Length: 323
Image 1 (cartoon, one colour):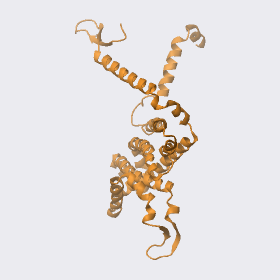
Image 2 (cartoon, rainbow, N blue to C red; image 1 turned 135 degrees about the vertical axis):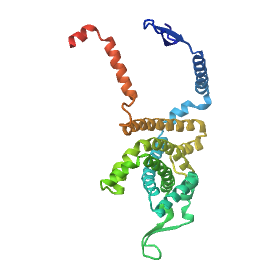
Image 3 (cartoon, one colour; image 1 turned 90 degrees about the horizontal axis):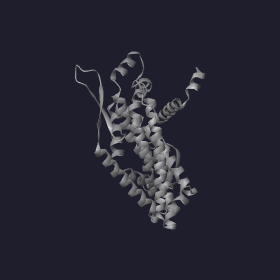
Image 4 (cartoon, rainbow, N blue to C red; image 1 turned 180 degrees about the vertical axis):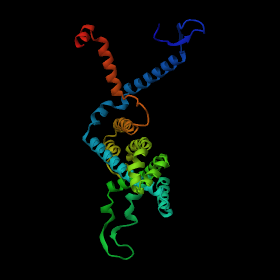
């Protein structure tokens, strides 16, 4: 039978032998839609590949440039540090949000409301201009007490610190809602059983609730990490040389804007792909026990297919000798 048609098995009427007849079922719409997709893809690829204005030679020249790689390193540093601050702060805010203490709960709610309600770009600009409000920063006992430390705001809040504060504090508000949703998804009977065993609230949260909530927390956290990777490009507005700003400094000199933006896009796509693969395996790790059998990974499917092909081509004599 032709491989272009699916087959459907039709059972014989009652009273007849169990003979099975294969009835071909054709889907011309699938072939037409597939042909349209292939045609559009070929047009796009041909347009991109043959258009000399993309400057693919310039793209190849700057793809591994030291200035681009330095900006890439800074982007990774901002992403990792900001996400670490956001996760720690988010867990603390989520626990505070679920606290029976109205003052603690209100403080957490206000923080989430404020940082989610203002754009992250505004927050980055605010931290970069903080010296206009507080030219001198100090640390000590409040309300007239002695100062333990003081210094200039411009010396303390550098562009790197401003970027970390703007990204990390904003991310903490979003992570708080993600963690809270994960905690709420755990059955209350788990907490009641832990309290019956004499476990404290903090110990119950750390040993019972959070491990079970991770399978709900991990997927949106992975999405937030990928989003943070791209949001870090906003740091260019405060002249901190991450990936995008490094490319801007280059094309401000050679006026090759499109090729440099293509370089930046390629690196963002590479990093996003790596993070997506990592998210997939982390989700599998914390998803164990929720299903009887997890679907095989691409590597497991490849190994299984290779084993099947090897068994199919192995001569019978070799298999008899092994026995």
